[in-house]
Length: 113
Length: 110
Image (cartoon, rainbow over all chains, first blue to last red; front, side):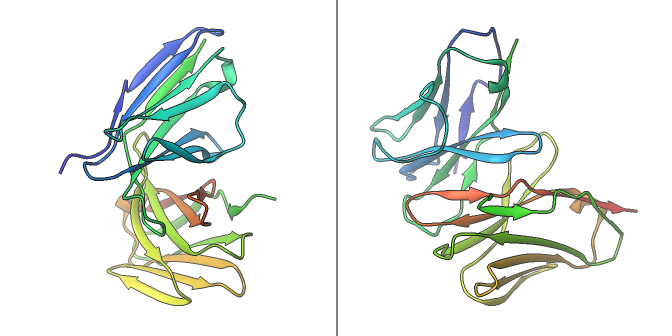
């Protein structure tokens, strides 16, 4: 069974640019969550999607957005990049029911210069 | 107040000792609790889940939950150098949201 696939693995962008990250969940999983991880801050919840609908959103500015497609693949977009957006972005795949554990992708390391 | 709090460490224990990792949470409605292990440069992987008060054992790992005290812990017996990693505590609060703590770094000295 294939795991969670995130692309690209590494990305370097310039301030002011925008970026799109992709996540393909485990086959059969309908829910995808996105997290931002920075040193000392742990995993900060960005948003969660199920069946193409955003069900919850964290405390991030509107520059951060996402979407989910009918095949459960998800993308997140960050516009007008700032230096502080440099982080590891992790996608988690869930079956869609509550009380279940997350399966994480390898992450996308974004560096903003 | 952070929703899930952990001591950032580092926690250093000798090989063969018991490592005790602790976590508190603020949302009394939290339903499920998870411990993830994250090696440097890698993504988190689930090692334990616990849903009801008491202890749950899996090999060298024991998770403990006390909902009255809003406290979750992870014990690692016979700690090995390969256990050196960051341990993340997480709680599912309902509302399709799982909250993670900042993690505790564990070093097991050979």
